[in-house]
Amino acid sequence: MLCSVSASGGSLSKIFSLFVMSWNDYRRLPQAIIIGVRKCGTRALLEMLYLHPGIQKAAGEVHFFDRDDNYDKGLDWYRKKMPHSFKGQITIEKSPSYFVTPEVPERIRAMNASVKLLLIVREPVTRAISDYTQLRSHASSSSSPLPSSTTGGWTGSSGGWTGSSGGWTGSSSGWTGSSGGPPPRSFEQLAIRPDGSVNSAYRPLALSIYHTFMHRWLEVFPRQQLLVVNGDRLIEDPVSELERVESFLGLEHRIGRHNFYFNRTKGFYCLRNDTQDKCLRDSKGRKHPRVDPKVLGKLRRFYVEHNQKFYELVGEDMGWPEK
Ligand SMILES: Nc1ncnc2c1ncn2[C@@H]1O[C@H](COP(=O)(O)OS(=O)(=O)O)[C@@H](OP(=O)(O)O)[C@H]1O
Image (cartoon, rainbow, N blue to C red; front, top):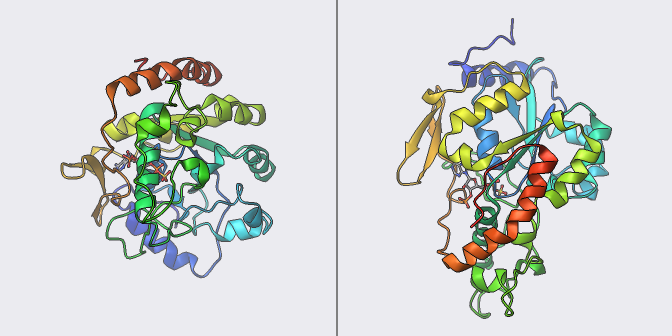
């Protein structure tokens, strides 16, 4: 049968499937969606899941549910953005800004009330610093405009992966302009107000207050339809975190230690399938700036109450540090 694929032959089967499917337009709406959170490892999660023979992934960030101009194009437009798949395979897409966009939960439910949702989170202060690092990197290269979308996630990929949009930019980022403007402000300057209080309006900090977005999802979807993936654990020990995801998606456990090797230069695990070894590109795993430990402590204390609210909503304690 065409759809019986082996773990070791996962990617060969996927290539074969593309060949066969070119005769039929078997593109399916996603049965699972990675809804965010931005800078928590959404790309790594998608690429790692794609090691499984039962998964097909959309190439870029589709941004169907969060952008009105895309949503207005309708479900058939969305379906055509999906890869070819066999019956029985799970199609997944990731668009990190779904999590924070108010209209998205209802729109996804209108498409498929039983869709499975994957939410990947990281320790909130680390996530905020990652966000700051990306904004700073984009600002410093603002003379060469950013691409508007993403199409993949590998280094050296012939698909020409060109960067990450993450879903928003803008004045609240705290950047004052491109080349020729004042020097970029430090994370500390943006995160802490002159009076010493936490600047919770600073967008990278606001996006890490997860409960303010989470409650909307739980008003629309039952808790068991959403898996909270631990992005810090995905970095440290991808296999054990992916086992949880495989179980949640109803997949056999096929992704194993043989699918990963640690790249010392990059400081992250890279991925291996039966045909190639690949690391995520340089925009994934950027070096973060050193942040004043006093500021780190202040921010961690600021998030304690917010993290607690998030734990209560999802019924899981992520164990994030309190100082
Ligand atoms: N294996 C592996 N290789 C490289 N990077 C990894 C990996 N696993 C998780 N991560 C973390 O993914 C972070 C980027 O998150 P996202 O892909 O969600 O970013 S984005 O919102 O799509 O821009 C990225 O954040 P930064 O470290 O700040 O760059 C990584 O920490």
